[in-house]
Image (cartoon, rainbow, N blue to C red):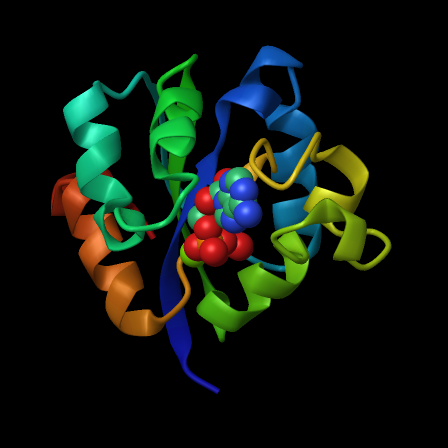
Length: 140
Ligand code: ADP
Ligand code: MG
């Protein structure tokens, strides 16, 4: 298996409830390494650009409003098979369907306020990391 990097967001529902450390503990317990991290607040334009792939979905406007409702923590995670591994650590999009012990099962409030984002492919990981970090901000 190859060493990969994936892009992660700790979403506003989680920062509001002071869960950044609890989520990072699950990430690190899985063996993934947090090689870049910063707390930011996105503008509407930044959230719309990030979720542009979902523009046609009925929940798009609500999702953008949610993602700019408070601070987020953007991260780069590194490790073996990082893209698929972090999807496993996160759990299913809808926390009602998420496996026990996953971030979303333990912390998500709803299908929208589901605490974390993780890239869905290696290609998208590269794009999302490039949108959010300068190379010098990533220290492996
Ligand atoms: P994932 O984050 O698991 O990759 P998607 O890419 O399908 O899921 O959706 C992006 C985000 O949009 C989700 O994490 C969630 O915050 C929100 N979302 C997805 N489906 C719904 C829905 N049916 N209703 C409201 N929000 C949704
Ligand atoms: Mg997705």
